[in-house]
Image 1: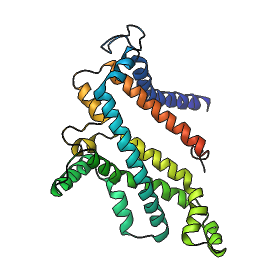
Image 2: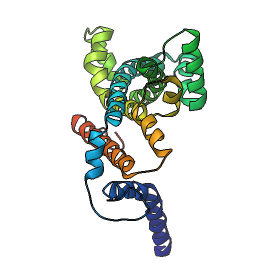
Image 3: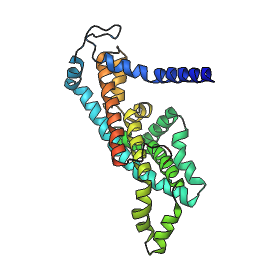
Length: 258
């Protein structure tokens, strides 16, 4: 029995090492005083200074943050509405419409959106990318909100209605506070997916429009420099900060079983 437990620990540690060791290497080599990642030369912060002086990188980062913020805000509102509708009304067609963008391959989604924008004679740019990100983020938010609703006691909403609350008041003062952890989780997921997306953005960005993933891709075609490691480290830091903020705003968000 003890031998089996030991092997389980070894397998678990190996799995976590496979997941997180590359991230640790990226962070460490972002401080490497060398233009190549072949070997460690010494500690330096020059790559971060160079990163914050790179106007193209800053512009791409600003575009990604703007698109991510708008896409997460709009998709959270629409996804929450879709999640509530799927939970309450059990419509057969609605889940298909909402969840299809999640199921289909990203490259197919990108090509479809590109053809759609071209048919409408819509100029490709930040707006087209934002609309595309909203389209595929709605489904992720809807899934999270719907799962949260599935674990909610509907008798609370019925009690509010019995006390004279309108459907909107019952949703605003009873349902929404109870599902808020799911809404926050959906918003964070939408923001992370938006800021990280490459395939759909590649097809819908158009000439002259760049985001952080597109900028990083253009850089690594030449070489993977510590500057790429530096921007990747900052992205990881941003993700961790968002998780901490979410856990503070909604303490039950990261607890299992809630």
